[in-house]
Image (tube, rainbow, N blue to C red; front, side):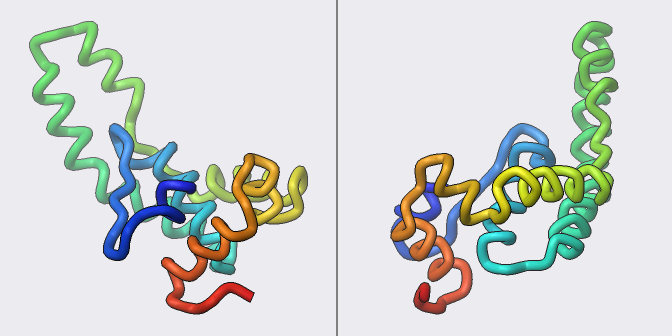
Length: 126
């Protein structure tokens, strides 16, 4: 989050190995911070699944000659159910009340949250 707040003007690239779980949570936090409804965040997360199957099949094919590696890949199918992200968001709201409160508890400042909001919306933070 701090990297997004402190990045110079322009785009910010965010990724992890498969681009679903860690990336999904960070993107969910960013979207929640700017007021995107949870149902839309969960739907965005679920949309990842269709886009990740080609990567999964490529990784599976590349590991075909290595049974141990293949088994590991096959345990990591790119399933991205909206209910999974909704559970994460429900927990966050129950425990911390809001994305802002969670991020403040995690050590970000109001100024950093404002810079993130401005980066994502172009609007000054209030």
